[in-house]
Length: 60
Image 1 (tube, helix red, strand yellow):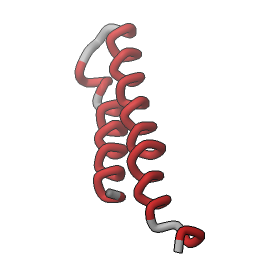
Image 2 (cartoon, helix red, strand yellow):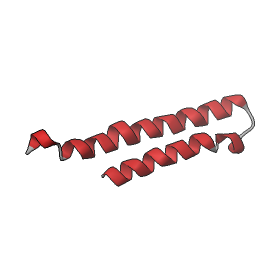
Image 3 (cartoon, helix red, strand yellow):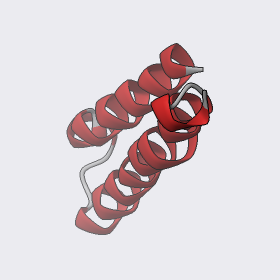
Image 4 (tube, one colour):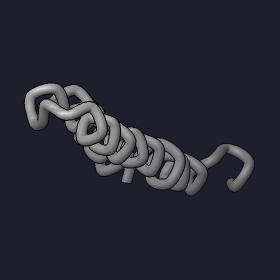
């Protein structure tokens, strides 16, 4: 679960970075960067956090 979260976060980061080469319009870059940022947040908050809370120390 953690590896999947890291992968989604990294892909969101790469999408944001490569938005410079994908389009030349400012609005297109802004949209692609916002999608990449959303992917990063889903990876961190949605996937990694759930995986880490599943094995939390206070749940034992």
